[in-house]
Length: 310
Image (cartoon, rainbow, N blue to C red; front, side, top):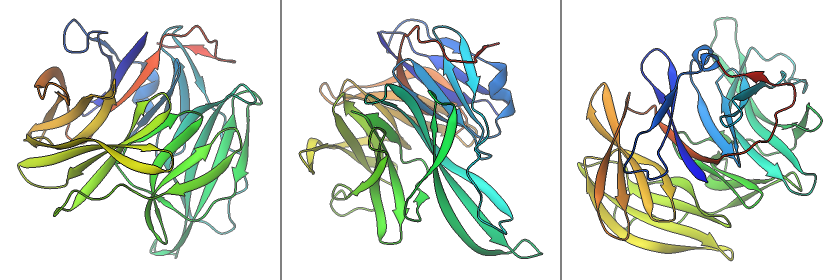
């Protein structure tokens, strides 16, 4: 059974809330695992029954909530460029390679050169790939790119998708875990007459989706697109929603999870049904801009060299 998990931050520590299978009803379970306390900033990815977490320092943890196991990935041994003064992670992706039957993590490391006073001189990106099967890292050749924050990501049909800023502009970038190659695709059209943003989602098991939405305004327009047969097609037209900030995720191709800001210090989750046009509130609260949502299925997969979650 697929479940949704929400990563939250209460100002001091990160928490996980696993939603009831009924989503809009029932009790939701909240976990406060100690390993999350060490992460200053954290992003969440998932694949099958496993979750992955990373921070700006490049620390990565794999977690199985069903077996209550976690594994800290070893530090990357990929050589760093000479003379760099600072390195940060610009995010990671997590997925499964059906060809080698191996779980893999892709990371995007940004390396800086600075002068003696800490002023920026230059930067470069390295893409690195971890194999759970071999417990090892290697470099993936890639163009220089920057991650687009709060733009979503998705693992669909063997590929990890994110939005990336290349020298040529913003694109959808994919990484194929079997061929270990990067590709890029255009974004959907902007909402007519607006300054739009996009949030990538998993539409179904074989299709990538993208939620287009207006960046500003008390009432924002939302659209849902799906990438099939090499082109974007609009699934649902404009929905005008009031007092919502941004998309968080999609479930069953129709339930859109959104963040609604209540004050400068508090937001909560609302769910919009593209079919019934209903907007409902979930009793899940967080600091504005800190929530993320992913899905997982219960699995008995045993993480190698794991430790119990506490």
